Image (cartoon, rainbow, N blue to C red):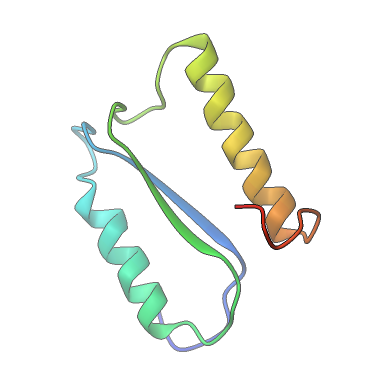
Length: 84
């Protein structure tokens, strides 16, 4: 991570992930926020009920997918400023 422009980034983590502690992506996002020189989106989403993979329920998975698609649409400028 160095001072430069970065694209819009969505970083996700699961609080109960046995492989990657939630603090690792949180530290990465904090460092990016400190170093980035642009105004592009940088979101950190920590799911309190998920592990290494997303939640397993069908509707929970659909909700997570909708969040990711909303982020992509916002990053592409296809959602007004009052969106996410």
